[in-house]
Amino acid sequence: MITMKNNLKQYIRIYGYYQNALFDQHKLKEQTFGEKADNRKDIIPPSEIVDELLNIRWDEYIDYIVNEPDKIIRKNQIPQFSKIVDGTVNLVELMRNEGDYGFRFETLGQKLTHTTDKSAAAYTKYGENHAKLAAILDLVLIISISGTKYVYLTELGKTLADNKEVQDEVLAKLIPLIPIVQFCLRRAARRKIDVEILLQQYVSKSTAVRRASSIRGLLKVIQEKYNGTKYQSLLHNIF
Image (cartoon, rainbow, N blue to C red; front, top):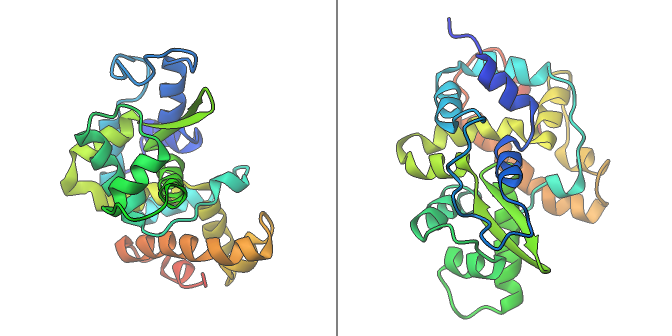
């Protein structure tokens, strides 16, 4: 039987672990933000977290998640996106391949959609929504320098980009770490829940309608990858 290791427990409990590490290493005032991002020695190597996520059984993992205390849920931690792949695999691979120089939202939007005929505002919104999903998953850090937002890969984001063969499984196990997803899983362990109604505790009704489809999309990824037995009913309690 594989049991959860202390590294993984620590990572689960410290939301945004690799974002925090990257932010601590580089101060916002520095013009060289994003350089030399590999020289910290005091953080858990992301390769170890990836290995532990791959090795832990789904039932043990979900059991730990649903029995953890609720995290504070902020509005900006409730994602809204068009394509999960553009806020995860496509985004980290794009940034990794092009040098992780600090992408603006507009640039990301244009490169992710592979188009040139949209407005700057449309590209900015698309890039922002999908970068925020990646940030919620601890794959990137978004910072503001002189009023402009820039996106940088975390060490976890780099590791995910470099290990294509395990991306789907790792992402499926990162999704339960999103506070609003954890909240859904814990409530669904006891009763049937409507994601849209649950979201209205944090956002307006109209916003809840838009974001509910994104949350359901994330939960569907878990349902598709889950291969245990204990929580089948839990995953079917979410609407």
